Each structure stands twice: as structure tokens, then as C-alpha cells.
Image (tube, rainbow, N blue to C red; front, side, top):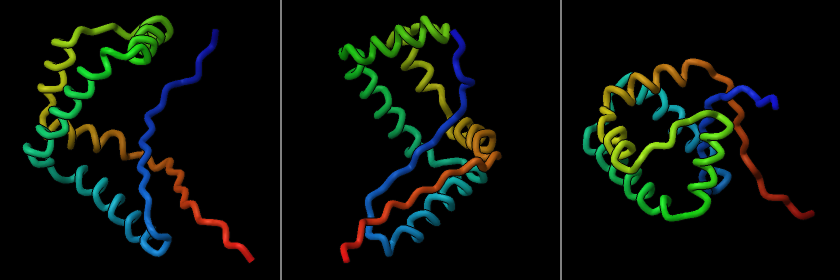
Length: 122
């Protein structure tokens, strides 16, 4: 079986008035630029880590979590990790790690930007 090559994908979506779409897109691109140049606040990263751990603890009880985990293990040879290992990995992420990673993933600009507009009835 031949599988496609893995790529990184980031999807950002929001609901807004059409008039505000350009302004919100600029904010998103400015934040991407900011995180590449500046280390995020420790309290922001800590809040995100708490949320990730909480969601993982909830998801671990769902069949879909285990189906995805088993498929990733079987198809992609990804190691199945226990809860403690996951939490240690998440807790060891530093604000500097985020900044460094952002510099790596946002250097290529293969961007697809979609703004959905409502159909205007005539």
C-alpha cells in the first residue's frame, strides 16, 4: 500500500461579518509573524498545556481516540504512549520551543486562503 507524503497543515477559521474578514486575516498573519519573532508568554503556554492535558484525559475514554491511535500505530508506526508520557511531553514544551518551531513551519508560504461569501439573491 502506498501512502501520501505527510505535510504540515494549519487551519484557521472564524465566523465574521464579510466587512471584517480582511481585518481578521491581517490579525492572523500578524500573530503568525509575531510568534516567529517573539517568545510567547509563559502563562499563555501553561494555559494551552493544561487544556491539552485535560482534552487528552477526556478523549482517552472515547472509541475514536483509540481507533485513531491504533491506525497511526499500524499504518505510520507511531508509538502508542501512556498518559504519563504524554503529559510529561506536553509539560516539557517551553515558550522558546514554540517560537523555534514557528520559525520552522512558517518559512514556506504554501497558503490557501478562502473567504466564503453568502449568496446574494437577486
